[in-house]
Length: 305
Image (tube, rainbow, N blue to C red; front, side, top):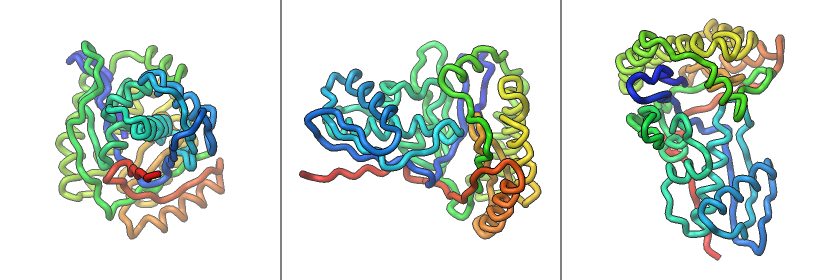
């Protein structure tokens, strides 16, 4: 839902806002094997993740990993972190590796800027991290977590557009961006501390949505040079504007897009989804769906022999 501080003059950078959702999901099965076997979806990526884990913790990759479900990659829904952690936690259980989820995130090359995805995997809900310490480079600390109201919904749209920045492209984009003006960081902090979080605690969807939209605009302004505008494409910008017109309380772009979303009440979600789907069909195409918050984090089941 946004980064807080891209200035860094207080010794910390980034800081993130985010919430876990219950769909789409990653579903991974792991069991002992005589060799490395990877089946299901995203097999090459999963194989690389297994090898990275085994190299980090010095265990033999004698495992059968089956990737049953994945989140669409590079669309702004945190697929890389969730798949990496799902694989790592499964292997840690299988090989009796004693490591915390944040430690596993570091071993798998995640949490380089924020720990939002890591904490969502671990706890779910709405989370805020305290930014990357520029001296120690440790995992950003979780400074706030609140269950997300279960009578609120997200209408999520993924227009048919180029996928968002990732890996080398993302690193290059960050390296070229100037420091965010301190006054804009201050505005984001104020909207977060004195409007977004109190509204969340008091179940005030209208104030929450207003604060979220303002934070998204400030963040979008900062990243405009890297993504070509307030949002990642004109299609995203137009879809967000349409969502506003449907009566959404708050709107935004997730990460680098193209995923965009609207925060709505449960009783309005189906009607707004119908309108958004029709809008996409008339234009660039794409998919849209309703989801609610995941307030528990990942589910882990262990089966005996």
